[in-house]
Image (cartoon, rainbow, N blue to C red; front, side, top):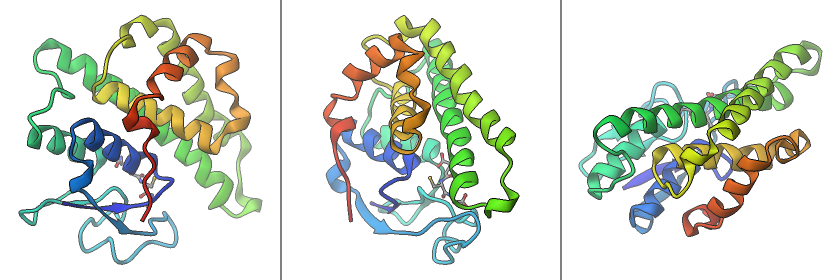
Length: 200
Ligand SMILES: N[C@@H](CCC(=O)N[C@@H](CS)C(=O)NCC(=O)O)C(=O)O
């Protein structure tokens, strides 16, 4: 199995953390990529017309994107329990959507900082994106007891979102306002899957 890789992509990381939790990380070969919304990576497009990473190549030749599909495929392959069945499934998938939504907003703010030409930047729009992270963290803080002891696609997505906020938005200082989430993440980020480092 192969995956188009970028070391700072939180969605790629989400797939790799998932693979690690499932005992599949060693079976994944990392391939170089340069996904960018403006200088688009032409080598990705024949496989994934969106030109994004993660893009994943299964051993049978099937190509999968995006991170949600890749993670569920890996879970099925390993007969894992990261996507629970029954009523718990919907809560877990919604938590995944919250983690991914924080990432979507943070990535848009990041592109505003580094991809958009300075004269075209719109600070209120950037602030609006980071406020999505803020309101989502407030929601997580109010329901933090529901995260306790859980390892599934929901907590993986949230963990990767917090990892990315630390990587790109240290000034956002989310721990100062969301102590309960910080406590949860302090323990969760010690998991071997979250501590693992990947490089080409
Ligand atoms: N919803 C997608 C998001 C993937 C995504 O936006 N990846 C970024 C890198 S972190 C990317 O490829 N950006 C290039 C682009 O926007 O064209 C997923 O979950 O995989």
